[in-house]
Length: 96
Image (cartoon, rainbow, N blue to C red; front, side, top):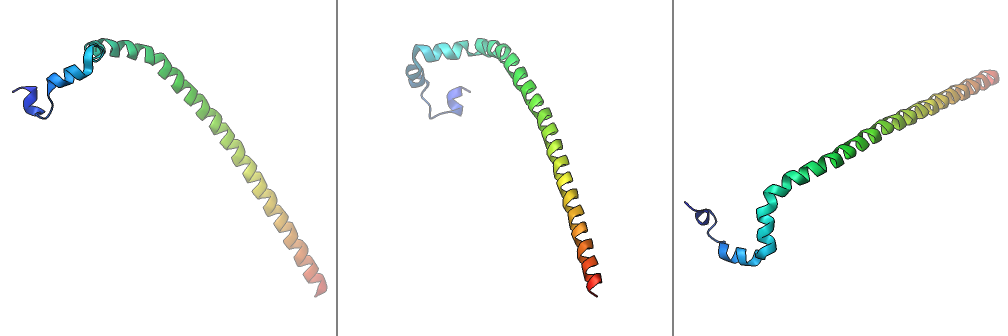
């Protein structure tokens, strides 16, 4: 069985003519260039991952601070509401 049996609609002679010398050279060098590109990409990938981890850690700290601030605001609001209710009930009891 040939490749043409699996892909009958492609004329490989036309494909080779369409690719030309640069395309054929790229196809031939592709297996050589992939490992080289992989070695060059590893430090970039590591730096990107490190940056992501640092950003995540800083984000956790910011979120914790925002959470604490929100809890403080809720606690202050509840205290003010309780104080207003006690003043309102004291006024109501004084009128009665």
